[in-house]
Image 1 (cartoon, rainbow, N blue to C red):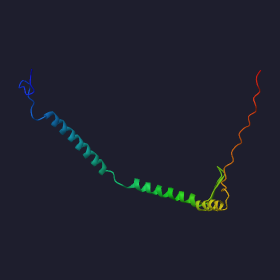
Image 2 (cartoon, rainbow, N blue to C red; image 1 turned 30 degrees about the vertical axis):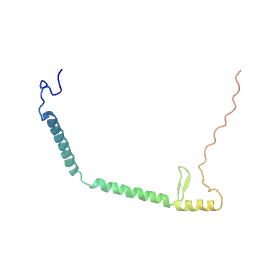
Image 3 (cartoon, helix red, strand yellow; image 1 turned 45 degrees about the vertical axis):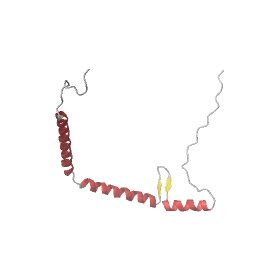
Image 4 (tube, rainbow, N blue to C red; image 1 turned 60 degrees about the vertical axis):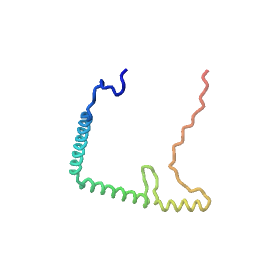
Length: 121
């Protein structure tokens, strides 16, 4: 029976050259990809795109402010718009008076009445 310290087993070299070579290849690939990404990032300059985005943002904010602070009428939905502060005051006054606030709802079409079905004979 062979013992653990048997000299008949093949000796391994002390340095795992395959593992070292694989690690170096992966390291070079990683560094190369990182260099490519950094080079691509240098060519992107803030400019027209960021200025256009800022202008769009300002337009959206101005529109939202106008909608929230002005009165208006939408003929398509037949609804009126009131400023948020005025709507909050009206709801608070109704609540203080003990009445539920009047919140108009767009009229809905009446559902068709179903006629009782005649029994088939």
